[in-house]
Every structure is written in structure tokens, then in C-alpha cells.
Image (cartoon, rainbow, N blue to C red):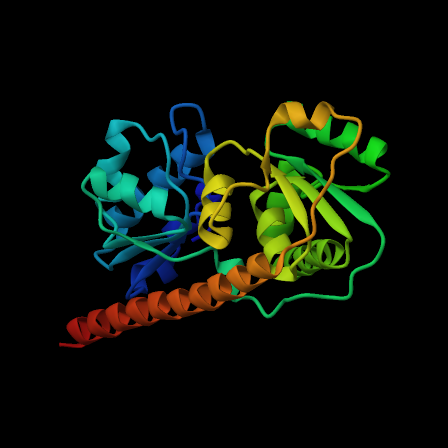
Length: 279
């Protein structure tokens, strides 16, 4: 299950035959009072539980600022695998079982590349911040690299041609990996900057997910900038220190180990459910 369940995939015969159901949160579960996409995902979890008794796992998610009724929906999940400690504490404070498992991009076979002289500025989930970043790209003499041209086109690429979607993500990563520096308002652009060991600055997104990422990967939010900083004529992106590089490498090793442990747990649950069905 992906983060766009409105296509009705949760009602497929494969779901009814599944021994576990894995729901990819992709950071969708936040600010549910104002975000239809987050409410759709929660509704899908309810429909899944109505269709099958198989264990449900929510993975690769950030949760923040949920409505009180949302926690009862998440109770349908056997376990939540969340991307940051802040989300885990929030979940546990509201009666949910949560384990930290860093963003799954860190498990991809992608890493540092030879750096060029070009600078990259990305967009943001927030329209006003995107406008400031686009302006900064002009001042900074950088390539402006939006993550997706439109929500609809991104959804259709994923629905019809997953391979094209994956190739697009690899091209996006490659642009960041080859950059001299990055200024971004996107969580995954910050993730890719860490993975590729590209010097970067990040502006706050629509949740605390970027701050949490920087704290956990680097031990400090010093590479987080304020929206007002984008009004400056120039931004200085400091190089990564040896300490930062060592922290990034440790964080990534830990992320891969956590991901492996998560999938082992899900596989064991599937095997147990299979034995129960067989008996």
C-alpha cells in the first residue's frame, strides 16, 4: 500500500489473501485536520482492517499533529515503524506501539559521487518558501530543481509506470550527489544530501521532520535555516566537517540495520500468519 490509496487498491483480491499488509506512510500522517491525503491514508487502514485480519504495519512515516480520533485508527496497526525519535515519542504518548526505522532511502545503493562546480536549489512543500527558493536560485546562480512538476503527474507516474518513477528519483539523487552544494526545503533532498555527502542547508518544511533528521544524523540542527535567511543576497553553505561525515556514515549504517530488522520482523509475522491459516 502506498500513500495514495484513493485508487481503491486496498480492495484488491491480493489484499484479502495477504498474510501481512505493509502501509507506506511516506511522511503523510501529519496535520490531519487540514490534509485530505493524510485522512485518505487513515481511511485506507480502516478499510484494510475491515477486509482482512492480517497484521498491518505502518512504515516509513512521520506522525505529527493528529486529531484525537486518528490514534484509534492507528491502533489497527500491529506496529508503527517511524522515521524519527520525535514521532515515536508522540505515538507512544498516545498509546501506540512505535519503533524508529530511518527513512528507507538510506537503504538504497546510492552514495557519494564526484562533486562538480554547480549549485542546486530545490523547491519546498510550502508554496511561499518555494517562491523564495526559486528566487534564491537566481541570485545564487544555481540550478533550480523541483522535486515534482505537479502532484497529479507524480501520482500518475507512480500508478502507471513505477520504473519511470524510480528512474526519475535516481536522476534527482544524481543531481544532488554531483552538486557542489544544495539549499533545500525538501526532506528527501536533505536525505539525499546526507547520503551523497553533499554540503547543504535546509529550510523548515511542513513538519519538524527536517529538524529531527538533522538532529539524529548530525547531532545538531545547525544546517537548518529560517525562511528569512532566503531573503539574503547570498547564502554560504559550509563544507561538511570530518565529524559530520563520520556521523553521517554511522547514521546510515544504523539506518540500514534498523531497516533490515524491521523487514525481518514483518517477515516473521507473515510466516506466523501463514502457519495459522494453514492450520
